Image 1: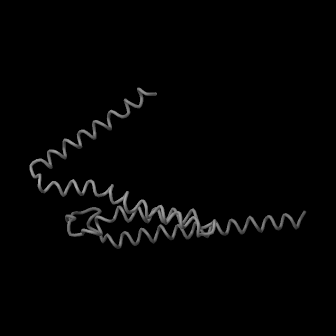
Image 2: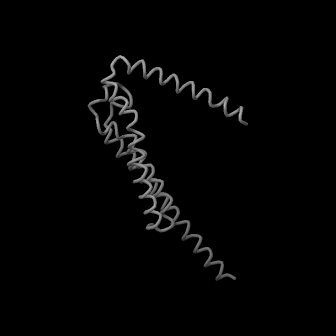
Image 3: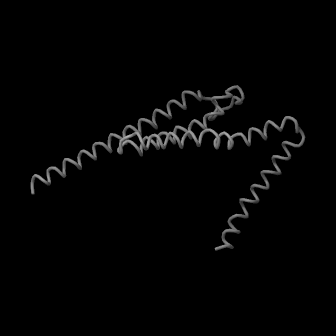
Amino acid sequence: MKTARIVLALPGLAALAYGVVLFLDYAAPAWPDSFTTLLWLGGGPIVNDAVFAPVAGVVGLLLARILPKPWRGPVQVGAALTAVLGFVAFPLLWRTYGVPPKPGLHDGNAWLGLVATLAVVWGAVLAAVVVRIVRVRYRAARKIRARELS
């Protein structure tokens, strides 16, 4: 088992080393300007650990305590997806001028895309809640009918 882990870890370590070499090739010639690149590379994990993860955790805890049982799971999933989508969309929403004009993902309206995606997510959350409530009421009605028949 230990040998398998080492064999599986070697390609990942090789890719990490190659990434460091590529970054040094990029960063070494323009060192003062590449410091902002280091901040950009390190900023994502720091912002995630300092802002998004604690906020998502507190919101999830509050939702678990406040919401009725059929609402908890779908709303927590919707909140987690909202946090992830916000984290992914943040660079496009924050610095739209820095994105080069090219065909593909970056030529659309980032705000519209985020709002449309969140509308689909929360529509699915609402649909899941409705299905859960209908299922709970249906089961309760079946139990009542079963008691009346026996």
